[in-house]
Picture 1 (spheres, rainbow, N blue to C red):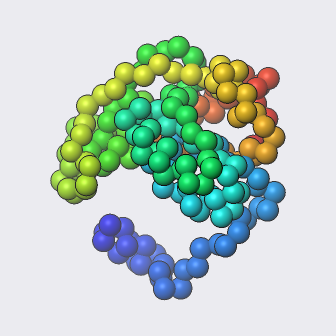
Picture 2: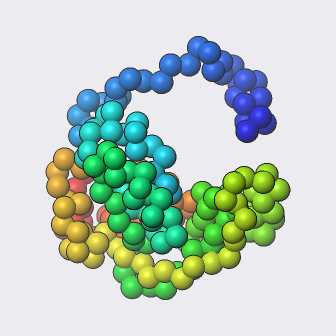
Picture 3: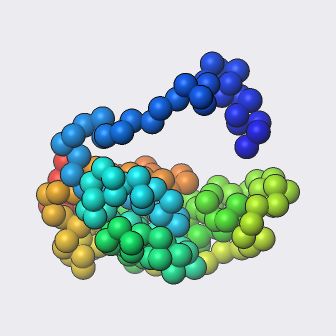
Length: 181
C-alpha cells in the first residue's frame, strides 16, 4: 500500500485535496450489476447512489456468506454464478493469496504472483489452489434470474480479473437478453 501511495504522490495525487464525488457522474444511473463482487466492499457507496437496486455476482462459493452478510443491510441482491461466454463449461477458479481478490477463471494467477501476495501477510490470505465451477452465460443466467433484465439495472461493473472480454463477448452474443448498459 505504501508503494502505491508513493507512486500516486509522484504523479501529483494529494489525498488531502481529493474529494470523491457525492453523486454519480450520470444521474441517469438507477441500478448496478456488479460482476466479480468479492465481498461487496462497495455496498455502502452504491446504496448512497442507487439505494437497494444493486445485483452482485460472485463466482467463488466460499465468498458468498460474507458477500451476503455485507450487502444484506442495503437490500441488495446477490447470486453465485461464474459468468462466461458459454454456459455449462467446467472452469477452474484459481484462488489467490490476497483474500482471493485476484482469483481468476482465466488462469493468469502464477505461482510467482501467489507468492508475492502471500508475502504481504494479508489477513485471510493463506489460501491458494483451485475450485471447479460450471459456467453460465448471460442468456442462461437471465432466463433463470429474469429480474436481472429489469430496465432499472443500467450500469455494469466487471471486476473479474481477466475474464471481462469473455463475459462481454457472451453478453453481446446473446443479444435477445442484452440491453444497453
